[in-house]
Image (cartoon, rainbow over all chains, first blue to last red; front, side, top):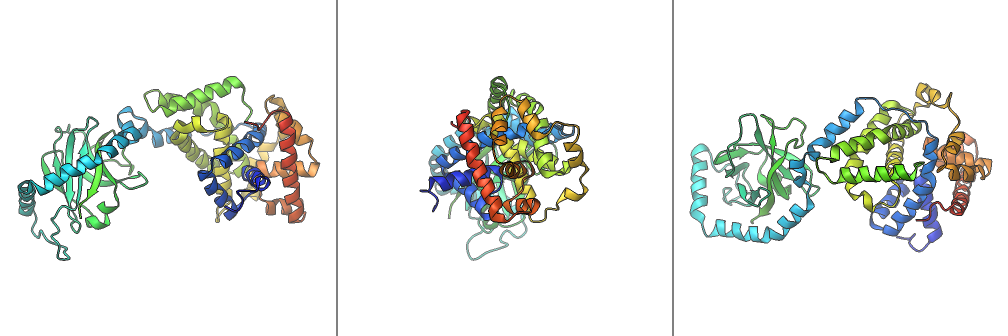
Length: 254
Length: 195
């Protein structure tokens, strides 16, 4: 950054950033620079401390009564105690440390115990008229993306696998039966951690779930999968509204 | 922002409680909202001059404050300063989005806003904590003071200031720059801005 060794210029830019007269590309570059420079953030905070008291001169205006409920509705799902571990870094960190172990276990699962996989394939094939729908020569049923979703005690609750070119997700549910007034929704999480619904899962044994597009164009972008408890029919907000029941990293095997 | 040490302490505690993400978090965040939303809404309405946009901004900002209140301890400024800066920055983004329609001409909100209330400087002086900035502002040249106040309260850019004040762009830039540096020196004398 060309400004780095010019303290007077930095001071001026910080002052004008806070005042608001730093605009356009210069403002965006400055904000981006702030993200990675603690000294710059300190200089900006000093200017905020200098100038923001001017806002005391602004007359208070009560916002409309409906605003708080709207804000609460937007944040409350994440405030519920049961779902807080969705965003719990410690949980993810511990999972990250264990991930190689999980991968090894899956490799064993896939490599050493093929009969189980074959058995699953057979079950799926019985239900599917054309098991091979898209192929570039590779067997689309070969599990290429695999995730084991665990509850917060680390107990495996759901196995998920899918072939690269397949649009059918195989699920093996090992959790308890769900009450009639609740459903389980599967979410894919990309690098930003934003959940995207993949649909409702069958909370019983083995099942198949249809994706809108093949795994290489859908599951490939997700670093992790998670399942939340939702009202019957699933979340209506596009985001999880109930507690996260289990989650796990999505591993690529190809 | 003009808040007493007691208020600062309370707001800091509410932010910390909200950041813990336990059963006490939502009540704490609601209390924080109740204590701060009228001031922050006032700031947003003042800059945007449209209540509907100000509502939108306020909602986004409280959601953002909720998301980041867990890291608030890492922030370098008082809670009200931190929150006001979030709101001001968001308002500036909105003011400067490409399809922004300037509400100046048909704006009853703005008109009613400036009547029957003491002027900004008089209100500043009512608050002891904001007294220093008010004194330092009034110590500036009138032109410098006017340019800084218009930029702060109305979110005007250098170009807009030059148009409104009917001055060359370079002149206005100089007023702002010199005014800010004088403010800094004056406030340093009052012990403000040195963390």
